[in-house]
Length: 106
Image (cartoon, rainbow, N blue to C red; front, side, top):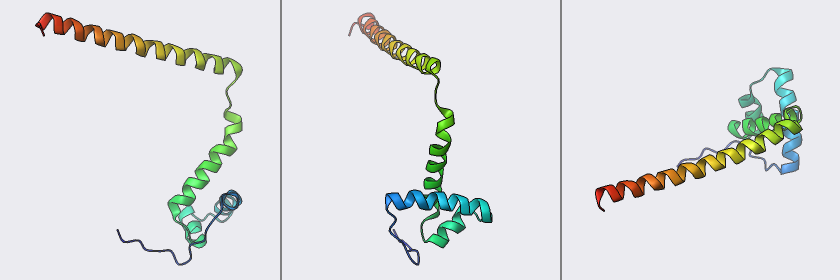
């Protein structure tokens, strides 16, 4: 596979990346430049910057999307119910397989 290097590929540390992403989100909003252009200006792959920005956006908006205590309890209850239904389904599948093998004389 042929890789075309960017003119200057900076090594971005995780801490620097957080600062850079927030600055770049601001730069994209203020200048109206697309993420791809900002990524080219920085010398990184556009998809990488998009991933970083999306992750940062989810982290910033995550505070408002927290579950209430009632919602968390319902989620736990529903997960238990789903696990129980999966077990019942597996038992029924095995029962049918056993029934069919007995009926067929295997």
